[in-house]
Length: 225
Ligand SMILES: *[C@@H]1O[C@H](CO)[C@@H](O)[C@H](O)[C@H]1NC(C)=O
Image (cartoon, rainbow, N blue to C red; front, side, top):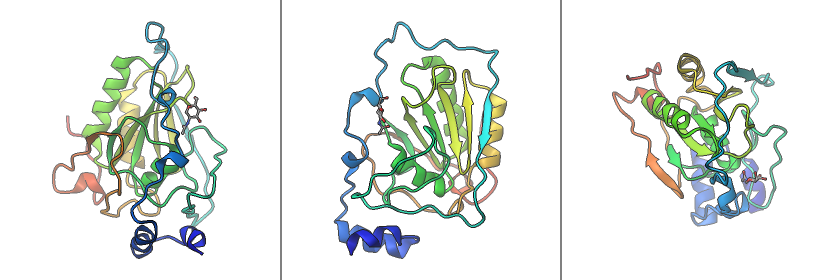
């Protein structure tokens, strides 16, 4: 009975019901066993090479009209056809916007449904490129999640993901990254909702919602220099 509740969840009221039912349990370990392999580079002297000649790769999925992902209960495993999914079923509870030690796909896909741009970087990506992209993301959009991911390729170990699209990069193309965020942020079925996540496990830096709230979902996304 409780399990069926999960897949019926679509709005705030349902979420409150769920939180009561599950007593605020995030049960994060169902999706991630807390292993350091997901956020550690084990060959830091030998990181992936930056290849400026590799152009950024923009990939968008065609979604059926009025597609809405499901909110699956912790008893159900979720399989994704892509290593870097742009949409899909996910868990009811999601992290507050910000930078994390690690967030599994089952969670950040919910932020994407709420209009977030998710930045993924392989732990063995070049630290200067990672730092550059983090700074850009944080200065452009409050609705962001930043997390490492070992599911990216060595050729393009940097990614931005938003509702139905991903941008894969070898090195940071600032124009492409800004364009992606401005065009694809705040999309998704609940992209303009002014709503925060529910947990902060592994949070390194919470997103700041600067300005008049524009960064948090309402109006045009502007990147502040
Ligand atoms: C953690 O990393 C391992 C090795 O790359 C991978 O198989 C596993 O799917 C990752 N776990 C998550 C939750 O992404």
